[in-house]
Amino acid sequence: MLDKTQSEIVSQVVDVFKREFGSPEGLTLVRTPGRVNLIGEHTDYNEGYVFPTTINRAVYIAVRPRSDRSCAYYSLNFQDRATWELDDIRRSEGPHWSNYIKGVMKVLVEAGCGIGGSEGVVCGDVPIASGLSSSAALEVATTFALDKAFGLGLDPVRAAVLGREAENTFVGVACGIMDQFVCRLGRKGHALFLDCRSLGYENVPLRLAKHGLLIVDTKVKRELARSAYNQRRAECEEAVRLFQAKAPGVKALRDVDLAMFNRYKDDLPDAVRRRAGHVVSEDARVLDAVRAMKEDDPENVGRLFFESHRSLREDYEVSCEELDFIVETARASGASGARLTGAGFGGCAVVLARKDVLAGLSQDIEVHYVRKFGKAPGIIALNVNYETDVIAV
Image 1 (cartoon, rainbow, N blue to C red):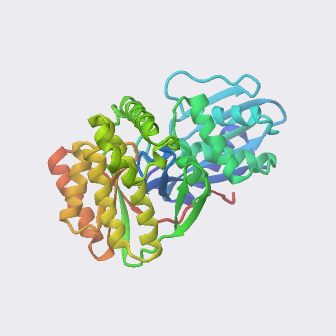
Image 2: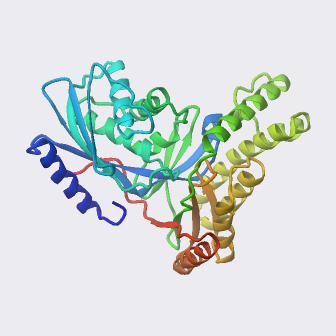
């Protein structure tokens, strides 16, 4: 799917729907983009700030209501069909694409939303397991398609929360709200500044007339991410407990500013101090990056990218050799900024550079990466022109 245009993907989805389910009459087809987080890493579950944007890769799902309570869906990516009953939704063992659709349906039913049985086809060109939110895009696309197909009238914020609930309670991944939120509420040409505590948000225009963004996929499987993620969360929770002894008003690391951190940091165990130091400074970097973007200062945004990566590498310790190599190669090739994006231990980096150096920089990264690691990275030139929407069939 990665080399197909949107119109080609839509055409293929409709053709497969006809093959699997007959006439496409009454079909609702929606597109939900993946996302890349520009800055604000490992802050979401600490009730802090994030600044992601949608990407020009998406999940597409075509849905049609049925007259019964049965559900049947076909995945083009996996060439697989799954069926279940709406009143007896059970999780498939192991990683399985249908769990994201089932999870959404289960939370909608439990929330009292009036959905019935349905049939559909799903596919996408968001790279899987690369930290670009292919799973959140599928959850949001499913929620949005069912919302439109059954006339639910869901508020977009509630829809994002329901998508996150599906992943937390049914799929079994304790993610924060960022991914589903930006996939549902992100807008073309904008990045989304989100307060993960209040869910207050602002779509901020990306002022990049002379700059561009690249996403560079290391193609490294994030085998350590789950256990390390849980450990980092536990260390952040320990930091909160220790800060609460000094300042009872602290409920999350979001409540600790740089002044408070510097006042009490020597009372924290080394690992806990460094984890908390990253989160506190990263929240400040997000606020600075949003301000710089509004002031049309992408060079300052890039500087914050580099600072964020250093913190993620040294203090939060979630980088890897491949990510560090991409960031340093980008720096040497004239990038304004670069950093790992997502949980770390593989996945992707995001690079900000002037347009006049972007093509050469991309080539440098690819050539040096192949020479160093014996494989080509995936490189996506980011165009922020997708948002969740209904696509005409």
